[in-house]
Length: 189
Image (cartoon, rainbow, N blue to C red; front, top):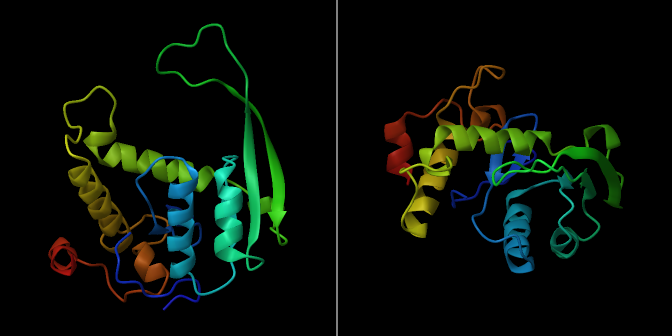
């Protein structure tokens, strides 16, 4: 068992950069209630003090403070966006800079980054058609969407061998001793 994670029966997006494990994710709005539920869930899954980086969404300040208290090294990475004349419906504004801000504890500033989570978002979007814009693969029911995301992360953590690790994230974190088959995964659900 990894020193970082406790065993948890729920199959619930936080990212462990070393093991590439996604120990928690949540579908919801980017509001205070969802942030609190998400961060509380994360706290329950962790065994030790961690370094945590969030984006600049202000609702994370209270959520992290309430869940972790002083037992976290927490920083925010706030992106600064410019405004372009040629923005179209689907193009985001250009990121013209970032500001790293220590919120709690002593985060190692070299590791303050949201890049791993952003890359994980891309992996998820590329792996599931329901996240592709303008497609007929979207979920008509939110429950089906939630199930698909849960299965994706279960497969990602326990079944998929990662090139850089040469094992699954769950194996790297010490949660399991072998790569699960899809059958094992489905029997667990």
